[in-house]
Length: 322
Image (cartoon, rainbow, N blue to C red):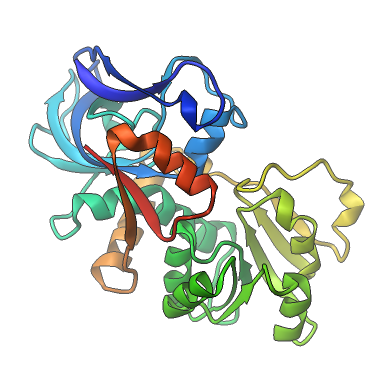
């Protein structure tokens, strides 16, 4: 039997239920890993609430983690028992052990700790595809990045600084604003005290931004569109405040572009996944990006972890430890 957190129905954090579950031997092409740390992300809350529909229930949530291979299925040749591994795109992480496809794992470099990996795989790979593939961020880029003091946001602050971009971030308190600024965010807007659209216009001399990265959703729409320069790109990659309502394409005034990307689409093949992770690991190993694990919860306390995340009490990354 393996300790896990499952949901049998969708709903609030109270539906997260600690259980002991049977875990079959790894199937062909799979490996069994023992988690050392498990990542906590907003996508977990979307799946728990039913905003993102799961294929079936009951289900074990969690999209990222790090640990050790303890068994391999038939046909697996690249990994063996004892290997350190991490992943960031596969449902089923809220468990002490799990089976997972070998081709969705990446070898974990010795210099990167398990907790660091669990805290950065989904979030760090998200920043990588947002900055290197959705929009090619460089020294001339001016961006708006919402939730700059969150787990994804703090990685984005550092990566944007490394790329020489001008990053305007939003945060919900002076403390969070200072945190984002300390991590490299060029300008930070306290959205509880300032109108972020007006402030962006001031900071850009009325020109607007090349790209807006929006993980908030309903509360920042359509204001995010008003922060873009003509032919700018709005990247909607999350729904922390709820989904963006249906809108008329005429709101994309100024020949704006809009996209709704996902990490899964940008890491669909093993080659894409490992290229993304390799770039992320290189940034961390070079010291250009530091991962802040600011909240640690026992696996059995996943309900409280979800409550803290949804109430925006957290900063940086949060993990579950086994």
